[in-house]
Length: 180
Image (cartoon, rainbow, N blue to C red; front, top):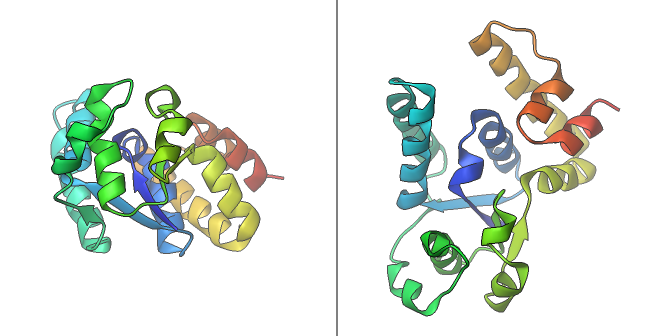
């Protein structure tokens, strides 16, 4: 399954790390556009002056890890497309050009299911998506989650409880499943 990752799931860090860990575990093939990655980099400014440079370094690593993920030449599709927020049309166009099966996004209202279905796409909430992957392959997703948790502990200097970390990352059902 090929899924386009919207900028809102690439930033914040924990959500991105879990999703890309699931991709590395073979749960799906990720795709994105340079414009989506640029939105991630610009969003990282929120954390201060080091946010954007750090995001750009992480983007370089993500691109190296998934060299076939970048979708290009989708702009010609944009004029025929419509979404409630015209600023998201590039996401839909990239998903179509990249032959994605769906879009992973937190922005349900900006990606109506009926419009995506007309293009053969689904809208996937990251929490529900990861919960589904967990139900199919619990060992792989537990390994991903524990690795992300360890990295969060290392970077923050805190001892995050796994379920609390996933809840903070807006992945509450996935976090609950991990701690049953």
